[in-house]
Image (tube, rainbow over all chains, first blue to last red; front, side, top):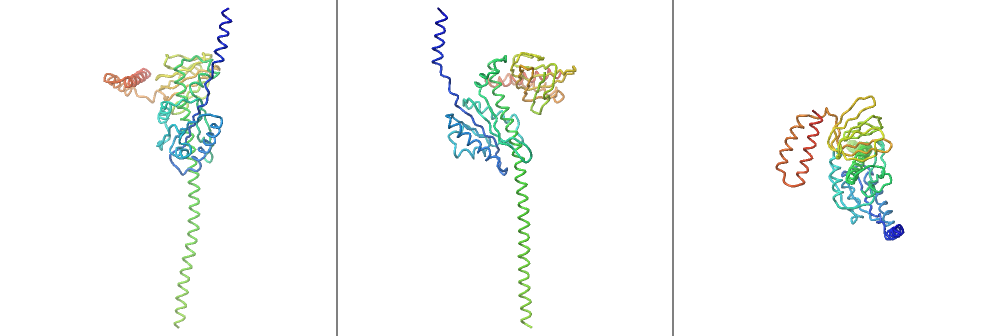
Length: 231
Length: 131
């Protein structure tokens, strides 16, 4: 009967169906273009390098995106073949959504199809501490196939809009956290440097005074001896 | 029903309970009450009206963004830009609208036409909201 035919067709199709391997991973690293801010850049690079190693070990193809010149510099030496795109010359003023739109658009237009991804950035905790964190980003497929998505009444193009907007928002969130962390880290680093400089100045002043006095004493001694010798 | 609209300048509502939210979307404007069907929509430039539980309304103009109505009646409205109406100038909106309409006549390719069309719609919505 028909039911037997359709059931066997379903089994044949299921046997032939090979789910596409989810193995393209996008890693975005966020820091800034300027230095003198402590371990801001290196902490991200460290986390990303270990993540690349872990992912490559399980067979995923990793693509890197560097947001900021320092990010690109730190990772390019060892992972240049995995670089998708890098952004630099972010404004020195706080990031706006407009800046982020440019980045998100470039990512979406780069033609890179990824299955999963994370943004690695420094999240601000307090004036003296920040934490290197990851934020997940999702591809259109991941969102569309999510379990909870089935209860939503939604059109296909709305979903694409949603994914793109979500991507931009995630980058915005991480950029804001990153710049705040960077400012506080630079404040601490420069404060410490100033303190160290003060200490060095004090030490050098002491050394200078001692040396100065020693020279004067020596000259005085010579003059006095000379005067005594002439008597 | 707790919504949490977030605009670029900041957060207007965070976990507040309200009675109804009117939103302008690409598929039309609709009002959201408690127990609305869960949905995701894309915002278009227009007026968002929040009806508080005591009946007072607050109006905001949003540029674009997304809105999610969840199964537990919570609403997240994320707008790229959201401002209260007193931050907008009707005269400037009308002038921009006329300028955009004039530019449409001289537009060359599809992409430019689409961009100008979006500007016209945004300015029309601005004018309508302020009048």
